[in-house]
Image (cartoon, each protein chain N blue to C red):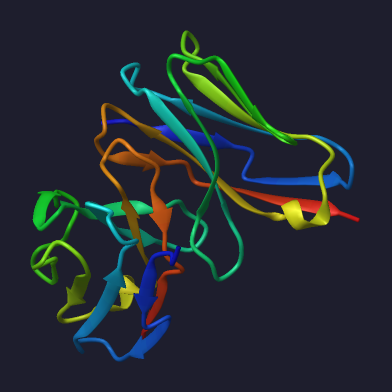
Length: 111
Length: 113
């Protein structure tokens, strides 16, 4: 089955700096890659996603890039704000089947 | 639009006791998921429903876990008997179809003493 690895496990940045979280996947047939933000005591919330026919997608301060050859995808957050502090999860899916989640990155944005 | 509703939000029980969790998905969503989330880890799928049919329950420990979605709407996940290692957050998610974005509920935090 698919294996999704996520790095780093913790990330601390200064407010206004950029943050980058990277995930690698093992199944070359995976074709859908969502990113979720989970705040304390809440369920994961989708923040951005990308499908395998696209190399990059952007939504305001958040962007995701996908490198199918290297089998990795990354989340980029620019101009970080304290409210960006949370745990971020990546996931991979193949052909509408089971989702495989990374182990999470705890992002701390220092004011 | 109301999101995914789960209850209870917290549950504390002693080992060997039964426990049940309830999930009401977003209206019109055919696909429903139950996930287990251990502390510091990502969600792990327990079972996925397409309407009332369980299409993927390969990760559900069937000796003690059971689930149902009788009318293809809300769902119940049960553990009987609970073990210490079952302490975790149980998340429910739904999507219009398997190919669509999943929307998660707030989860039920289970503590087994």
